[in-house]
Length: 192
Image (spheres, rainbow, N blue to C red):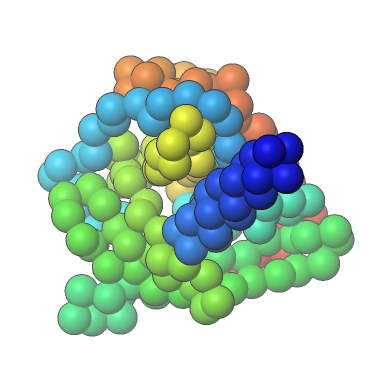
């Protein structure tokens, strides 16, 4: 009986793990709970969203572990395709990756990087010139897998804009205490 119960539990853990890996969820913030009901920016215009975005805060993600100076640049590739160029400093060394994004519904982009499962990037709100609030949450049984970023057009953000960006998450039922600040300093190796 004990062997059968252990086998069943092990099979369940393996199945959940395979589901998480297949959906690209392992790298996200993981917690017990229900994903909040959140709203996308329904009138998101991808054209003014293009250009550089600096990471001010994020939910800790495995691929970004030990990274600072994180910056993304979005460029139009035509035919509704956007190039995503992410760059950062990892353990003192410059690193970068290129991917693509397409708008799949208002306020939602499907982002894909080589070797990764495509992932939805929900823009909760942006004013295009100072901030963007980005989030996603996937539910697998009683576990939620989420990521979030507060982005800025410059390496720093004034307090009023920062407070507003965080309030966007609060208004969507998202726990802002999970955010971790991202270092952005004069020694960051940005590529223009």
